Length: 87
Image (cartoon, rainbow, N blue to C red; front, side, top):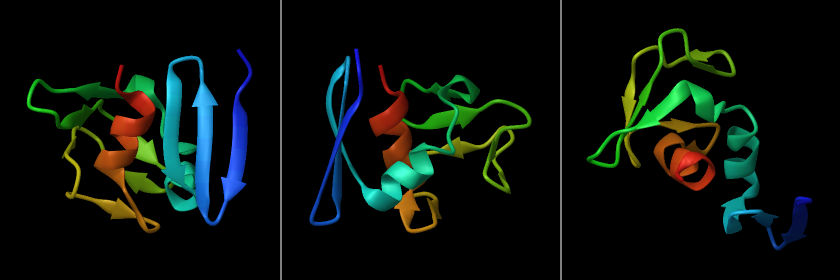
């Protein structure tokens, strides 16, 4: 299924095969740097990274992240992981 992207007033809306996901432009820029295969969601809702995981030039090797814990380039890492990688 193709990915449709609409930009409106600073809000990026991306539709994929799993439904409608809304991300801001800065969240989408961060999401583009995240490889979901390098992250595992914990039962408590946080995420743990695999050894050697990087987001851009930042190392997240064996790091636990939850929404509100880390912000990169103006976007919350935990929130972006939830929006991009949660199944």
